[in-house]
Image 1 (tube, rainbow, N blue to C red):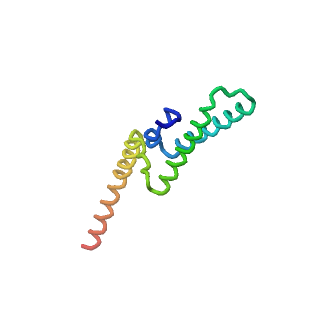
Image 2: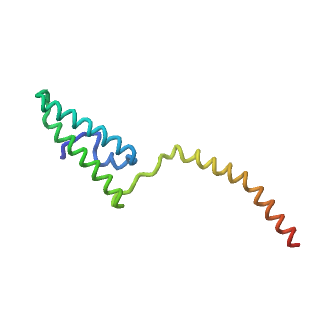
Image 3: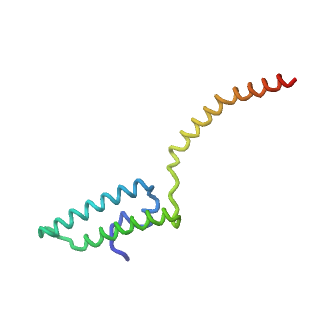
Length: 112
């Protein structure tokens, strides 16, 4: 079993969107900086945590790169926002539909 954060397992990172991955990467880099600072001042209690955070950072970079190359699929957007967009499109389509019908009837009357 690989060391690292339990909350940053590869299976869970697969479900994150790119923005969330970048946020997690930023948090991990900040934590690594703090751990290195503690190590330099002699305040670090868990030296294994340095290695775990480095692995988390590498794991995140790997997933980002695999998505860029198309090896790993990017997760689908949240379904909660999809119905709201669909309603807007249907309202817009309903608003435009009568004008298209009227334009079609006008073309037919000109031809006749």
